[in-house]
Amino acid sequence: MAMLDIGPKFARERKSVGMDGLSADQLMAMRIHDVRAEFVRDMRNLGYHATADELVSLKIHGATTEFVKTDRRFCATGRHSDKLVSMRIHGVTPEYIDRDAFPAQHGKC
Image 1 (cartoon, rainbow, N blue to C red):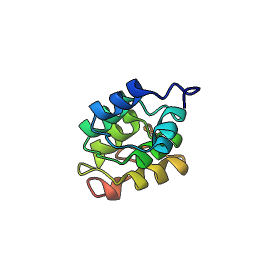
Image 2 (image 1 turned 90 degrees about the vertical axis):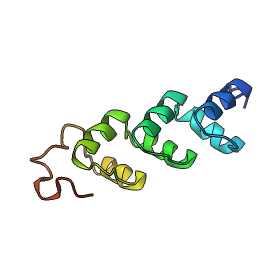
Image 3 (image 1 turned 45 degrees about the vertical axis):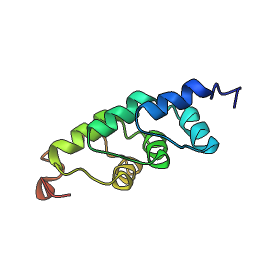
């Protein structure tokens, strides 16, 4: 854990954004996949109160806050994190998400 710089400061940063009681494995995954407190805060501000494992999955598959913000323009209620990950796995980009890409689903999630 010391090699990855996962110490009390790293845990406190996660706790400051509501990620309390994380296991050593979760902290390690968050460090390895660069799940920063800022990402957690941004996702929460977008309405996603995802678990540590969901946040890691979002980061692994490139579901950035930009991607989520773009998707929210057309899906006001927001999609579950699993759906966002699935979209990224299948190559959906922020540029692809527009009225022309999903005309029949505009506003439907």
